[in-house]
Image (cartoon, rainbow, N blue to C red; front, side, top):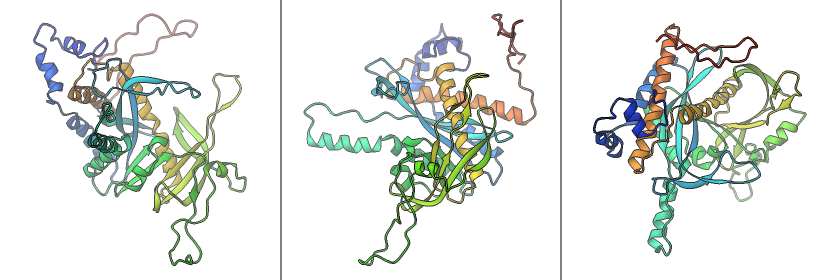
Length: 395
């Protein structure tokens, strides 16, 4: 899987392994008959990572889903879904499969971390019932839709991961705005902390204060707190400057925070910290005008988590986007032309597991002091990359 030079179909994988003239039946049955267990491979990655983390360090995990485009109409799990690469002003639909991934942070040095996949699951939605379906079929469809909802599946895999990690070690989950909802926040497992994006107009509340209501019931929420956008624009709240590693070097980030707030989506028992990160300035090239990225609005389910750690943990989340790009474009995860549910579940997960094992070996070798050989970058006389192929490294 790591060495296939062409499209990563199962046929090309067999030919890369030297089995072109042999019987292919066993290779297809390996996945269609559920004879491979990617969870065992990911378990090896997780064990090596936990063994190299300090005893007091938390396990930082990023969660996200990705879309693998498909054109076949008889492939398991293929649905019409929103195109994530479409323009903001127009919602485009494409046919594809949805996969969920957990990637854990492997710290290296100077605040850097490499995210390594520790879980990859096919998460198809519930198929719609046929026309003229009976009431029992509709009821079954609604129940199946709840169980196969993306956030419900994410919570189930999070509970499994929490059971596999020692209880003394905290588990910190990073997610984008699609995972910051009541499904995850209200049922977050014990010993887990969630850091995620939030809308800039989210309605937050202070803690309840004052006398008990005339009805004798203590209010669950206090007065309205400023929205994240209002906090960013409030000149009475000073900006704090914190250094953190991101985009290849260390930057000074300006943040504002409001500790101990409540949100209806997380419930009155879940205290949150709100964090606003100011836009980061950048230039497309030397001498160009300065541009600014969008501000980030976060919530954290642990108000006592140090701001320096909270900021760095969130910035590590970008590594899962890098994993998706390399898994799909370099290794061809999801390119195999298979149809059954078992094959679409296990074959792409095995490709991602091979990618995770490769990174685990590289990071272990680096920490052991090995000098990993890489392909050198060759430049011409004018500083432009040469068209001549680079020499292969000594392995």
